[in-house]
Length: 90
Image 1 (tube, rainbow, N blue to C red):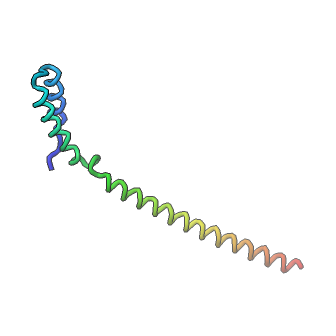
Image 2 (image 1 turned 135 degrees about the vertical axis):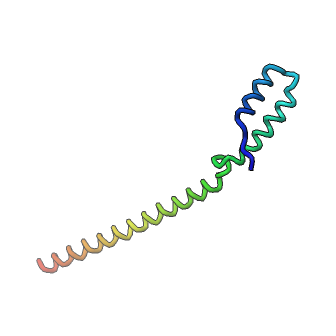
Image 3 (image 1 turned 60 degrees about the vertical axis):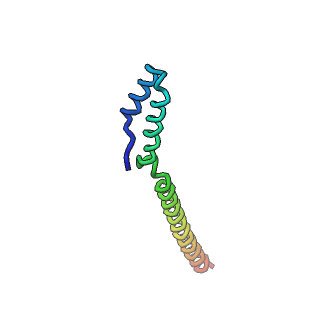
C-alpha cells in the first residue's frame, strides 16, 4: 500500500495556483494522492473503530449487569437481616 505524499499535494496546489494552464494535470496528481489516503490507518480503520466501540459497549453492558447482580444480592442480604431482626423482636 502506497501512502499519500502530502508534500506532493502541497506542491501540486502551488503549481496549480501559479500555472492555471496545467490545472488538469495537477488535479490528476492530487486525485492520485487523495486516492491513497485510504491507505492511512486513521482513515482506513473505520471498521476497526466500529469493532472497538462494539467491544467497549459489550464491556459496559457486562459491568452494568455485574453491578446489578451485586446490588440485588446486597438487597436480598439486607432484607434477610431486617427480616431476621423483626422476627427476633416480635
